[in-house]
Length: 375
Ligand code: KG4
Ligand code: ZN
Image (cartoon, rainbow, N blue to C red; front, side):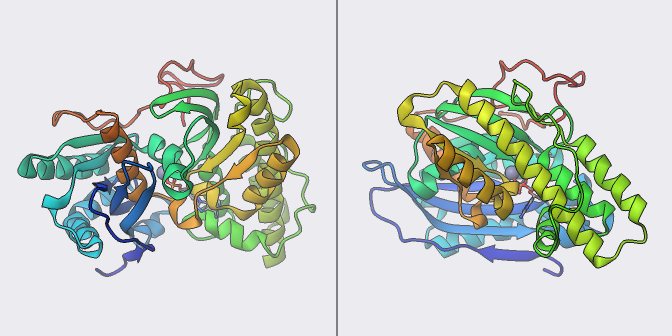
């Protein structure tokens, strides 16, 4: 299909006793399907196929994801993506133990496309259906890639969410901090847009930052030193805009230095927030693991800063491989397999949910709107 990019990620082969789950992900601008195998004895997982088709070319001209365009694009190719995921796993629908799909949070049109497709497949095959929370799938990815089981501390940083969570067990999450305005990925995307860089902004800012001087612009470090590990990125983004305006017209070195300075401010702020969360989380001493997940976890400067921090604090640093940081269906299939193992399957009238917090008990953060914090 013109303008769409499909990727395949390394896969393994199937063992007879494995639990086999098909995962479907359509919550934003990636149409994805994957098959994951979980060994019921060891609990270890393997990716049998992982097909991700991104829609960036469809949204690039608008500088962001257009929900209606995203939903239509999912409809156009989801059947084909699922067929490809099954084919490259060497399996048919009859071989599966369950079918899992993202039910939220995300863009409602896209969610309905994936969810309805998964329910139809479950109904037609008589297989169990699992409705997966997209954030939980990001949170549990390290179980698939490294065999790391909860409890651990999680920094979830994506285009729509920025949270620090204590992951006490599968299905048991305590929110320690969240953003009171923009999500971190959103801040990267907006910074890229105002500097004239391409969409999606995170990778573009990272590329430019590589050649830049991170010390040239003293950008603010929002929330630094605050006791509760909440985040705020709106002021940082405004500071980038004002600095850019004062320099206009921008030269290549200005953009590179601004990107590097932005990344440095982000890394220092996140570092500070994570240290607070480490103190607040009260995890057992055997659980001194920091996991970073979500699209922004691909950022190398952030990874390096967090890895160094973990060394200082006696924590072990964990991050999924870059290919599994962004949205994918392997993480959905894996979360589905874990739910299935716990006997948690869902009814076929389970609704799609645009908002679906991992910790429903968390009080709204300062600055949150009527429906709670924006991200
Ligand atoms: O998890 P994800 O793929 O989708 C959501 O669930 O939101 O995250 C996408 C976000 C985007 O804002 C994108 O700009 C950001 O992750 N991102 C990055 C990098 N790669 C993706 N941000 C910073 N550095 C990167 N290398
Ligand atoms: Zn995501």
